[in-house]
Image (cartoon, rainbow, N blue to C red; front, side, top):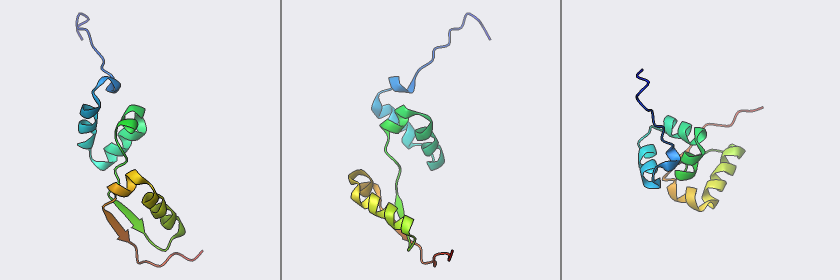
Length: 91
């Protein structure tokens, strides 16, 4: 590497919010989630990608669905409800 070549580092925090959001929106779901987990700036800049809500007779799924329904931001982003007809496991 040429020692005369200066390497300039740019922080994501220096990008305009609209640029950061546009870049992250292009990521596949797995990378989108990873970016939100790895960088606080990204997490604060973009909302949770929530397309659907899983519903079943499982108590935890019901609690999560209620939480989504009661949250103004997540409620507007959920466009699909997926119903799981399988019977709950007997424990």
